[in-house]
Amino acid sequence: MRKYMARRLSSAGILTFKEKHGDRYFVCNTPEDYCKAAMKILKERASEKFCWYYDDPKDPDTGLTRAKEIIETNDLEAAFEFLDLRSDWEYEGMDIEYPETY
Image: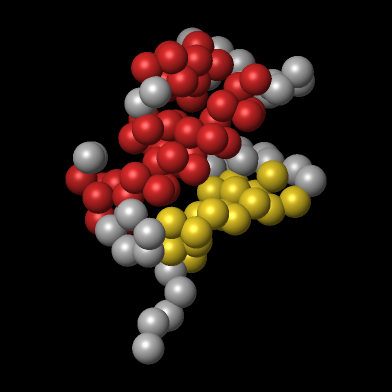
């Protein structure tokens, strides 16, 4: 697992996707849970009739072609990284909340 991801995903948390019609929440206990949730969202977004991913020659790591490659190879870590790279885009926010423990 990529170093920055390992630190970020090492604790249980709630992965939130901020989408156009509402937020979606995934309870994640392991790094694999975070990556599986990301793959689920990526598959949905890439297969939508009006998919807004497009290929930008200046940034090939965030386009539709890259999304389809990730899905074909079922690269869970790459799915998380792809969505993380796009998390500042409109309707594509992704955030992790780490609840307090007692």
